[in-house]
Image (cartoon, rainbow, N blue to C red; front, side, top):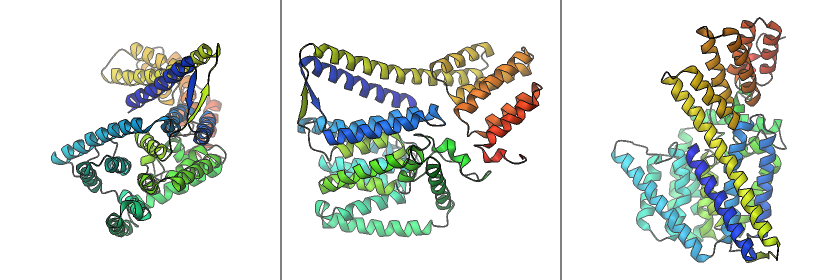
Length: 468
């Protein structure tokens, strides 16, 4: 949910900015562990470069912000002492109970595969894998049983395989009974996976993984931008294949496709170092989630990714590093921290307002609001944050006004401008180019229509038929 995501990001930015400002004014700033801070910072900067160079920046920049918040959590966890960690674990435990009770409620009301508050059951299963270790550490067996019931109901083969692998690899930490239970679950999961080898969902995964590899290979340094997989996919699968999906269903291939090889190497290397040094009991959820991520996409969902990053931060000890802020620098550093937080918060809030205005315009149009009112809302949304969906709907609105005789020539010119914007912001959407070609022909500009078709064919295989 965009509203919830924006709210979480605003809280993180406000909390970080205010905390840094208060500590600066007091004369000493606590620092996250140096190594993990450098690692997380490098990942954030690499993915920002990827987002800025993305063919679909309107989708890539918000996805970058969500991922950056998770990476920040890994480093920020080292600022928490033992008491702080207990409080955070209690908060996570409460959230786990809410999700578990919601799943039971859905089950009792006829939903055979409850997803709680998540988009689908596999994402919920990914969250459960990360919540289970918190429930164990809080010594809440009833919650553990509830989460396992919910996991069973999701019927996520990948999640059960992930849990099985994690338990078997952590035999000393979890005990022989849990390890053997993991082995049994893994055996059952393998049988279930084998039964699905010829299913459509498995065959589609092979195609998505191959497409993700081709994406990464086409842009090996920076990828196509965070969150770009779904939008770029039509350019990397056969035309008319019907292989649309939002995610690659394979965490590491999706990282390669969207952020490039250097990011993937740095991400995998850092995770390997964290897992190698971590106590076995703290690795269970992370290993389970990563194995699950080999065949599904829970780590592509911001909420699950944040929980994964928090779990990764939990493997690190508390940092004892700090820096003194002397004399007149105190006010300057504090003011800079607040200004940076305000600027970032303003950027997040503008994106949220733009999305709300676009949604309101769509609703108003469906309810029969005057076209002029809808056009004003769309223009304000586009002013706040250019977006291909806003431009596309603005073009469709202009065409509908032309169809009823509202200054047809002017509206067709407006539609061309909006469609050019939509195609520039999302060059992979074939219907934008098709509509742009059609409007150019209606304006009596066949050369521009042919040029639109040629430009669209560069990124949309379905438009290449008939081109010389």
